[in-house]
Length: 337
Ligand code: UFG
Image (cartoon, rainbow, N blue to C red; front, side, top):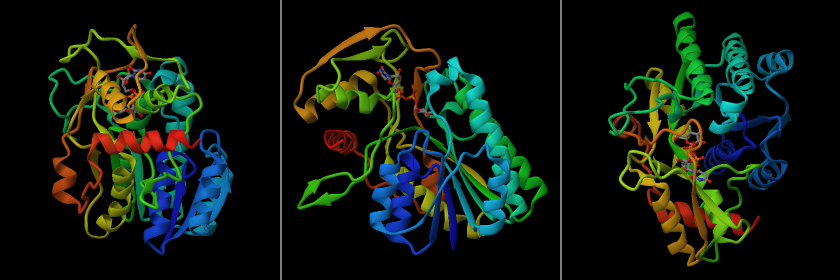
């Protein structure tokens, strides 16, 4: 089986690539423009098993078409995208071009090249503000409150329309909640992640908290504590990147016998920003400064999944549903970079 992973040099794509390289004999090609992904990650993955790496931006439509026609992939797992909510508020065009326009072209080329399975990384940001503070099911209304979420929702719609005109084409859309943690690689009983989260600039909560614990930053800003939640800070559903990655591998075989579908990927349990900060203080035994500052644009108060659908329909079994493990692996990764 031939699999193309776009964005495989990035945080989530590299964990999926790693699991595929370690646990299957599928033939892997990674395509990445290295704008946010890292060549170091590609080199680390090459030490596990060799694979093809193509450095290319998806905006190169002719080249994308040529690569798909030539390689005849069975599956595309599409991660390549921008994913920072706050940046999308400042620069929506950047998001609509890369996340929606380039994805539209990729899907069009995939259909032409007779790709049968397309696994798409979408986001919980498609739901927007869920007023009732209840766990979000896949059939909840989608009302993104930022261009990032809208750029992904539009791609979801394009995938759905594609199946109406192309009977051989199936998709799985995964709506990620907050992905965190790193490679659970142990050497001599020590957790030493080989790959992990590496964003420049970093905007995500858990990596910023561990950087502050490690004194790489002076203070952790908490964006608002006047939300309608139990302690005033935002609540998110943090899922370990290894569990999230594993669902993509399940999705490949799932599509052999099942139809296209949308699944949330989360643990159905929420933690507030303040709880995350305290948990990392406890795990690392490091104290550090925090300060409450004004809210960040585009942040919903509460984003927690209902994950009943994936647990019911797929063979996916989360193994790292444990906040301490998520934070510990993020911390161990950050210590070594
Ligand atoms: N936060 C802080 N201080 C920081 C960074 C973040 O208080 O320094 C808060 C944010 O305001 C938010 C929470 O921590 O309430 C989580 O923020 P992240 O930036 O880590 O993640 P987001 O929830 O904004 O977004 C992430 C992904 C999106 C995805 C979303 C789904 O980046 O792609 O989760 O829940 F859509």
